[in-house]
Length: 193
Image (cartoon, rainbow, N blue to C red):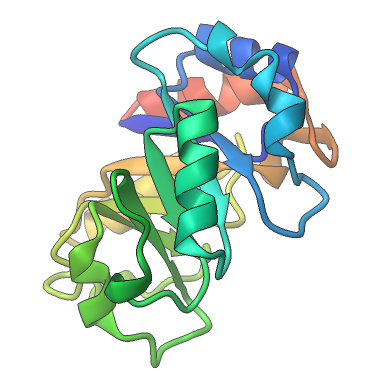
């Protein structure tokens, strides 16, 4: 299981996530209590070891701005949460697309252009998943150290195997600050599958 810790705003949380076994660190560049600015993290982002993916989270951002931020911070992935069509994707970076459970009218064809699809919502009806997405799926939304294993098993029981899990607010001590004990517990539970 691939684990991403998202909403990281500081070096200590990033390095604690890596030490606990996270394979990706997410930075939110959209309005959010967990918002990071490229300039604020540029001074320490290089401390993240090679091989740990750096993921920028964007909502309806100009592709050129995403490309600029990706180059500045050496991002591996742009995770898009808006209404971006494949024609609006930034160039030169891998794309993950968020699928909001409360948006059943989402154009599934838009997800075919992405490397992976993030299911944003714990209440997703997994009976709809087989055949719906042609890309690896990341479970997200409402996850924490107490329910991540159950969420993975529920999805797998529906004859669908998620590729990764993503957590942000579910393991926080305060917005933008991770609880390192809860983060370790989350990663340990997720990797138990």
